[in-house]
Structure formats: structure tokens, C-alpha cells
Image (cartoon, rainbow, N blue to C red; front, side, top):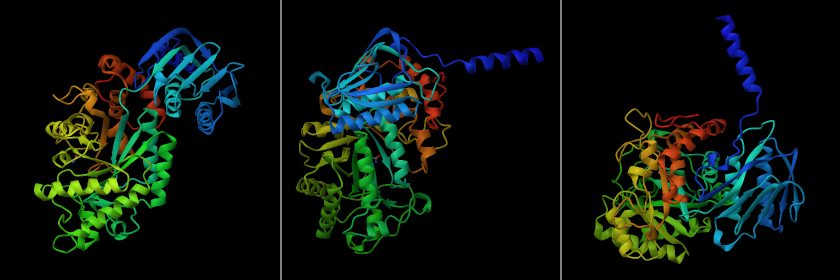
Length: 506
Ligand code: ACM
């Protein structure tokens, strides 16, 4: 028995002393999302003590990306220096001279025994190429770092690949939002929708209506103290996201889901009385008073201040579950909000119910519940963002044993979140109607980053792949192997993921 234990110990010591096996066949390297084309060359590139990073024609954008790559390498114990011009010794070449065919977000990564060549047409493409390289590299420092040689040509199928975080039900501090932004960036996602106001809380400073945060921001589900972002903190998150090629889409839900605003300002209520703060989770009981002029002054001020903080084209106005707003009031309200947005040079995004209004062709309808609303929007010439709750909602429980989350739409196991396509799930909703996919996380039951990670991972990796990779290249049996390979990487990042029994985790 003792001899056997010693043997086991020796075997362990022996294997621990070995550098981890690095695949030399590029097709065996697990990448999520799966690139459009991977051609293995069958050899490997070995990183030296110092790896030069060559910037073909230096510019502000290329310098920033060079430094970003340098930081990523440094985290793996790989030293590098940044040089200009063409590669002269083994290293990494970054170039913005890629062919037009790569589009705004595509990249070409060629790895030979002599070096790595990363090309794109736009900076975003280089950033995504660097994300692929990060996944090809080990996730922690090793004695010898090698990557498999080969060529990756890659570009996304949809321009809009996003997630939503509900910071209204439970508040998440800027530092936590930034961690979430980093996760999205790693998966080549480019939009973060922040649900900034709901019945339970108002989370963004509006200088012309200060009680929104003073009163409306003072609580959350369960009665905790809530919180809000000052405009400066918000602008800082927007900038942090932009550095990672992510656009923040702010949402102020209206005319329903507005109790926090109605509790802050009595004049927004039809009876002129402030409603009580609300910390429960029921929906559909609140509405702005749609026939009072002050309501539109309020909306105008909020949109004006938010537009000034929003570099992206869209502001999301909610519009869902306005159960106590009669349709004859709801439609003119949404129509007027659309005009207010236009006045402030923003386009409207809203949940699928807004398709009832006279939406124009610049409006985007976020399909979450009713495919007939999405089809109505398509008939009106608007575009659709796919977030069908049964597949894309990150707060749905995995199965009946999941402690967090809800299941009103469905239980969504890892395979169910992955095995669908937004362009074929429902009749009449096709690829040409869609701008992309978004995976929302509602936070009735989610109170902190650990809980967020458990609901988000691993499902969001599947959602990222649906947004990026062509349906013909998405196979569950192949995906589940790649996902399993990612486990040590996720653990090393401290991500508390749901270890689904559907995956043979490594
Ligand atoms: C929603 O889930 N109420 C958009």
C-alpha cells in the first residue's frame, strides 16, 4: 500500500514537472467562438525570452493595441518590446493593412515557425485576433510557450453581439460591470446593454431630475441600499468598454417599469401623488402618466442627458410589460419618445411590444417574448435583435435544481442555450431581418458577481458563438469538447461557472 502511494506521488511529481502539452495541430486548439476558417500547418512557434511586437505603420490605434497585446503576454510571463516596421526577427506583426474582405471586425492570423502575423482592416479586427491568440496561448505562465502554426481567417456573421445586465433589480458597482465587460471582450462580443431603471431602482444620475437617484436609487429588490452611477462613473464605464470595442446601450424602461421614477417625483403620477418605493419582483403595475405634458419634459431631459453620455447610435427605451397603460395611450407615447430620440440624434431600441407603435426603419425591436411582434416590426421595415427568453435569457435556471434564477420561460441547459439559430427559430424571422443576438441577465435573484458568473457561464459562450460563427460551423458535439477544454482557463480566471453534467469537463 505504501509502495503504491509512493508510486502515485512520484508519478504526480513527474507530471507536475513537465510543461503542459501544447497542441501542435491548430484545429485541436479550442477556440470559442469557433473561427470561420482554420488551416493547420502542423508545426509550432516557440516564444523567446523577449518577443518583439512590430507595428507595420504606427498610429494611435495600433500603438494602443500593441500595448494591449504586450500586457496580455506579460500576464503569461512573456516579455516583449514594441518596434515599428516589418518583422526582422521572430515575433508578432500587427498590421491594419488587411484586405477589405475582412470587413470592420474580421482578422487574419497566420502563425508560422518564424512568427505571428495578425492583420485586420479595422482596429476591432486586430482586437479580436488578439482574443483568439489569447485562447491559443496557455492561460498561465509556463516554462516553454508554444502555439500551433496555421492560418485563421475570421469575421462575425452578425454585427451586434451582446449581453444585458439588469443593474436596477440589484445594483452592480462599476468595478463589477468592468469585470463583466472583460468577459464579453474575451468572447468577441461588442455590445453591453445596461438596464438602468425599473420599478425597484433608478441607477443613473440625471442632473436635471436629481431625486431620481436620491430617492429612486436608494433601494433594490429585497430592500438593500441600491446605488447609482454618477455621470462621471458612467462615462468611465463607457470609456472602459470602448477600449475593448464594446458599445454600452443604456436602457430607461418606460412607460411601465417606472415605479422608482414615480416614487421620486409625484408629478409623474396621474394622481399627482408619489408612489411608495418598491422592493418586490412583480411586474406590470406601474406607468408614467402618458397624457401629462410634464412626462414628456421628463423623458426629454433624461434622453438629452443620456444621449450626451452615449457614443453609440442607440438608446433603449424598454416599452415591455406596460400592462396598466392602455394600448391607445401606449402607442402615441412610444411614437413621441421615438421623436424625442431623433431630436437628440439617437435611434430607438425597445422590447418587442414597441412594434405596436409607428416605429420607423431605424428602430430596433428586441424580440424577447412574442415572435408575432418581431414579425410586425419586420413588416414596418425595422430590424430585430434576437433575445428569445427560452434560449437567450441568462437568468433562466439550468434545471429544476438550480438555486438561483427563475424559470417562467424555460429551464435552459447548456445545450438548449447553444443549439438554436436566431434566423431559423421562428417562421418569418430571417438573417436579413436581424442585427444580431443579445443574452440578457435579469437580476431579481442575482445579487453579486459570483452569482452572476454562475448564471452567465458557460451559457454566454454559446451565445457568443451563435452571434459570431456561421450556423454550418456550429456543431454541439464539437462545441461541448471545446467548452470542456476551456474549464481550466475559466477556473484560472476565477470564474464560478455552472459545471453542467452535459459536459465532460477537463
Ligand atoms: C422582459 O423580459 N420583460 C423584457
